[in-house]
Length: 213
Image 1 (cartoon, rainbow, N blue to C red):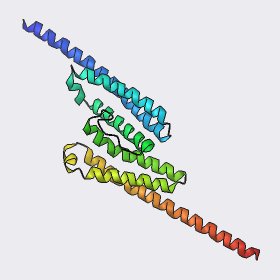
Image 2: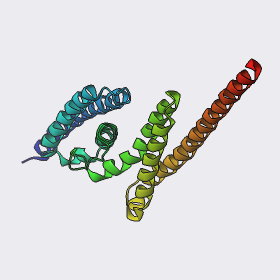
Image 3: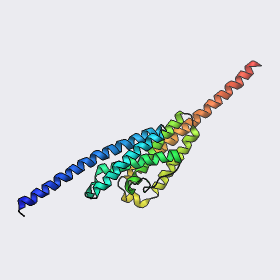
Image 4: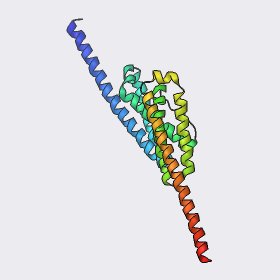
């Protein structure tokens, strides 16, 4: 075979790889978008809608695995990792809120690295849920959600090897710690405000009774 023929075959293979890469990126962008939307509707407690979105995203990941049989390098592209991470975050959040349990990486067919990374982001979504609880006046539920945030952070930081091996986990841990601190402050302020309102209301009723004498 001449060099020209060899290079022509290489060019064809490279062109095919580029087509596959572009198609994968397109699919992973869609999977990421679906997972983000699932998170949004989960906060609205539209769980069935969230499940449908995640089901569609899961089908895209299944197609990805078929493609990866011939082009295994695509599994290591940035868009794939980001999509898996967003999907894991959405699945974990939905199951925590609806069923009060953690899903495993195997259960949602997500590699362990994006699963671990997604836990840091779940803490941020739980903060959002906590603030919603505070706005609704449900301080007790907000406190329980804060406890869940603290549990995730505590157990993540106990994984010494993961903090060294998983790139980006330490940064997510630092962000999570900050979110927990300010969330605790938000709840403390609300508890004090509620207590003050109750004290004022009690005082007003006492004064009203005194005035009627």
